[in-house]
Every structure is written in structure tokens, then in C-alpha cells.
Length: 284
Ligand code: DGL
Image 1 (tube, rainbow, N blue to C red):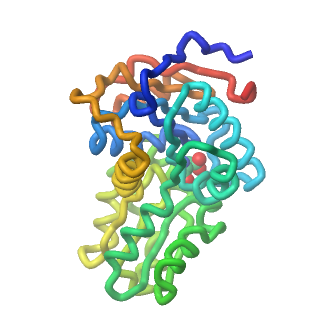
Image 2: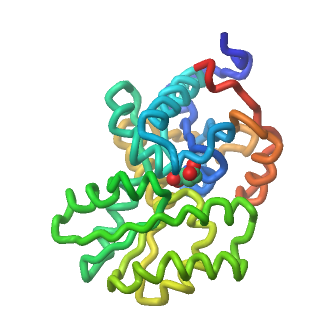
Image 3: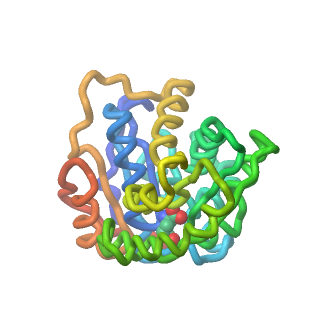
């Protein structure tokens, strides 16, 4: 039995329906924020899997299972399209779940790689992400599909996620950790670096300082919002209402620790999230 039926709205047309967006927890709010900024007419249903975070160290089998449950939940909310905001889930589950859906779904990896392929001049691209994302080599594959001459260098940076969640965005400890992670990549003469994890745009300035001016940083969250806009237009699903969606029209769900989620959300979104509701995702 799904306990949140009373939350479900019915929409006059598919265009008015919300976009479903999910992540392993709070990190995907960096993608939600870009969608709010770039597609202000769209409303959103966000799900953060705070009970099962982190995804970055879990197996593909589990990530696919979690993604299926979340998509099932989002479908009960009558979403018109789905964004997998999590890099790890985009790398490990998108291929499996997209075949099962009759609504559009996008992840963050393809949009990020498109920009990287466009901006690299020396065809040497670095990617940083969780252990599972880097091990999957999905970024490498997507880039080489577009340009086989590009060489991709990956580096897992698992400590960045807890540092960001601790709020140490410009802390000397974070800088020291970033130095250690990036030193090897920087020796590879890359000219482009993809921030391949939801949390990394929040430490962009720290990474930029260490990477130096010659390296172009790619933020897949921003690129995904752009790609979503094009996708909605192409599928005639863009909300053409004249007014910006008000903040209360977005809905936030989590699988645990709703209050903590709310605090983090309020620190990065342009307005207060009044309420995040907890649901039992294992029911879906
Ligand atoms: N959201 C995850 C990602 O972008 C990072 C946090 C986690 O490991 O779950 O890969």
C-alpha cells in the first residue's frame, strides 16, 4: 500500500506534469538547482535516497534495484519525464531502466560528456567521481563514442562526498584532499576536467584553484538542465505556462532523515524547502 496517495495531483495535460528527479541523497539538489534556474516553468518531484546513500560504493545489481523502486515511486506522482541526477546511478542503471520506460529519461553522464568533447583542444580529458562511477568507465565510453581520439583519465575521489556534506566547501582540509586526488590527473596534461559526481559542483572553486586556469571544468548538472530543456521541447512536453513555478509547487521526498535533508536543501536552493516527506521506498 502506498501511503502518499493524497499527495498525488492530477494534471490537465502532460505539459503541466512535474519532472521526476532522483539521487542517492542530497547531492542531486545541484542538478535540481540548475533545472530551477534554467527551466523556471517546470515543477519537480525530487526523491533523495537518504536511507541507502552512498551509492558510490555499491554494486550495479543494487543500484539497478534501487533505481527501479524510485522510478516506480516517481511514476505514482505522474511525472512526465525522469532525470537521474546521480552520476553513479546514471553510470550503472540508466541503460537497464530506460528500456523499461514509456516516458523520457536522462542521466547526467551524456550531457556532461557532450560538453567535454566540445571544449577539449588537446583531446585529454579527466573525470573525477565516485569509485563505482570511475570503475564503470561509463564516462570514457560515452566520450569515445563521440570522438575515439580523446583519451580519458579517471580518478575516484571518495572523500569529497563526506567533506561536502560536512559543509567544508572551502576548508584547508578539503583543499589538501583535493591536492592529493588531483596531482596524478594534472600530470596527464588534461585540458578538461569533468566534475562527475553530484557533490563536486559545490567545491568547484577549490578544484578550480588546484587545477589552474588552463583546465576547463565541466559541470554535468548544468549541462543536464540544458539537455532536459531540449528534450522537453522536442517531445512537446515543455511547460509553456507564462508564470514561473512557485517554490511550493516542487515536492521533496526522502527515504530517511527528512529534517537533515531540508537543512542541506535550504543551504543550496534559492528558496526554503518547507517540507521533505519521508516515504518507505522498499514498498515500491
Ligand atoms: N550522488 C552520487 C553521485 O553522483 C554521490 C553520492 C553517493 O555515493 O551516493 O555519484
